[in-house]
Figure (cartoon, rainbow, N blue to C red):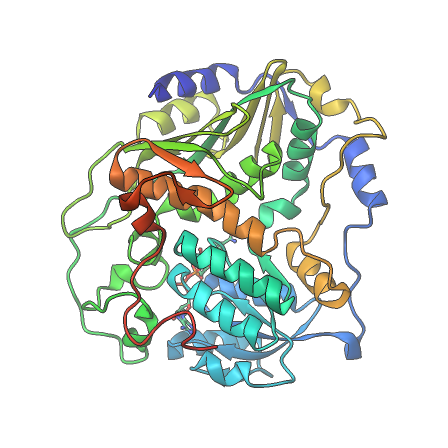
Length: 442
Ligand SMILES: NC(=O)c1ccc[n+]([C@@H]2O[C@H](COP(=O)([O-])OP(=O)(O)OC[C@H]3O[C@@H](n4cnc5c(N)ncnc54)[C@H](O)[C@@H]3O)[C@@H](O)[C@H]2O)c1
């Protein structure tokens, strides 16, 4: 596993050419009219926010440009109070099932922690609601397969909250790569922020405002530990997969989009943790590298980059303002690197030369939430539909499984199963705590 070579090459070759978004591409996006118009007062869908943490509330405020937030739901009274401050007309709920019964609610925004996404999304789709669900879309690959089936059966609109798809630099990078601007694509490097390696953590009294039992949902019940709950749930394997699923749901999504494999997946996965976990601490790997191969021969490395570790220091020295994370596509003719607010290429002309008129064009959206609302009305698929969200997080889940098994795995992206590997296949799903199951709410 030659990850250090990848890192060195990445450093050596980055920063050769920095570019803002070229005018030709901005003009093209304007011509695509990718920004949905605000709707008239009696044409605005009614949405419910389920899960009122920072991201849920942020999504609700972004949606308020196009829709009315008529209900807010959380298991923590403090979070509900916060959500009501910015949505004073919304009705408050602590049980999402009750709001799903309301016919005058057209869709939901799911801002709950990752282990709750799927059961709520399936229940909402079956109740006839459209869904904007936060990423990572699922906790397991089995959840994703079932969710995709339900979305197809119900014909509900589901937008996955991997909003980088609606940002122009990611669109540009993927469209250039798909049209051969780097030559024949050979390697994809995905850098993700390393996670915290904290612990051990002490149990504490459950806050009186919080329903800890329901918060845990399908996951086996344990004592309350503050570091397991709001915000930091993502660093526990029980509830999520660390930064590999958290940030991976963004950057692995872009990697698949650029490769044109966003309804497929890799054929081999091999991974190793770079540091051990602390007993009694977080249970998702904090620093790791995952090596993927695709059937077309493209190799992908997804690795954590620690700001305070050797990788991070090197990056910061090379360019103090540089994002540590992002996606680099390398081919026979050069490379393109993209991250939030930044796009670079080995030769500036790779970005500044317009694509020909017959170029392959990708789905264009300039407002991720706006695209969801637009699709609620048009009933066309959104830019990051259920299958795309499921396939992107599958790459992350496959990495987590390989990290746990510490051996090379063979994956069949059509059957969505490991090849002749019962041990790995058993990790595609998890046992849900009673009474939770896929049909419990629906
Ligand atoms: N797209 C992005 O860039 C982005 C950024 C941050 C977070 N996220 C995602 O958004 C989600 C929420 O993240 P956060 O940081 O706001 O988390 P958080 O823990 O701060 O908030 C989640 C809220 O959901 C509530 N909740 C849990 N179970 C519930 C249930 N069954 N019914 C109703 N409410 C319930 C919790 O009480 C909490 O208030 C996560 O999936 C995260 O990955 C996405």
